[in-house]
Structure formats: structure tokens, C-alpha cells
Length: 156
Image (cartoon, helix red, strand yellow):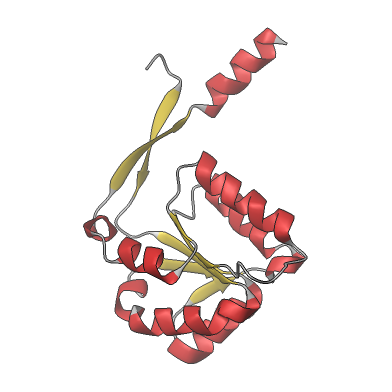
């Protein structure tokens, strides 16, 4: 593919981000309880309030960042770029306006750019976590950013 793409590997032990809008937090907590045995085998990350509520309800160990409106979504996005987060579960609320909607869109965009699996509802999260790929490494193609920058710099 002439160097346009490079292969990244999502390892068996995945970095999983757990995020939920306020109205969706109870659903995510219940989902985490249901999937606690699977989740405890992975590295967990989350935004502030959501992480605290999940930890209190499940005892899972989660590295918490700021709350979403205070930059937590951006911190999760940065960890995707750094290769620490491989999988995002974000129970979003489609019926309530969110003041930090641009941050959410930026997170969704970076997950797409880096070809990171992202569930935005319970059904998708169930399919993802029950996939056989949860127990094995997975190679995926991502844009070769160094080549992309070099080509852009030469063309401008």
C-alpha cells in the first residue's frame, strides 16, 4: 500500500474507556456490573464522575480523568492518540443537548481516525465485549501519520 497505512496491534489486554452522559450513567453502571468479570481483565479508563460511580458500584479499578465537560473527553482522545486506549464504550444521550458536544464529536472523530472500536449504546457494547476478538490481539490499518505530514508539507 505504498506506506500510506501502518499496522497497529490491539493486544489481548485492552485499554477500555468507559464514558456516559448523565442520563445514561445508570445504564453504563449496570452494563459494567453485568460484564465485570470481562472488564477486570483489561485496563480501564474513564471520565471523572462516571468512573467514580462505576468504581463505587463494582469495585473495578479505573484510571479516572476529568469529567467530560471539564476536558475528560479530550484526555481520553489524547490517550487514543498515545496508543493507550483501544476500545471506547460511551453511552451517549441522544435526546438531551450537551454543552460539551464539540468535545464528544472530537472524541468520536479521533476514535474513527485511529480505527478504534466505539460503542455508543448498550447493544453495540454487548456485541463488542462478547466478540471473540476481546480475547486476542487484533491488527488494524491506520493512516501513516508521518508519511501524511511529510507529503502534506511537500505539497504546500
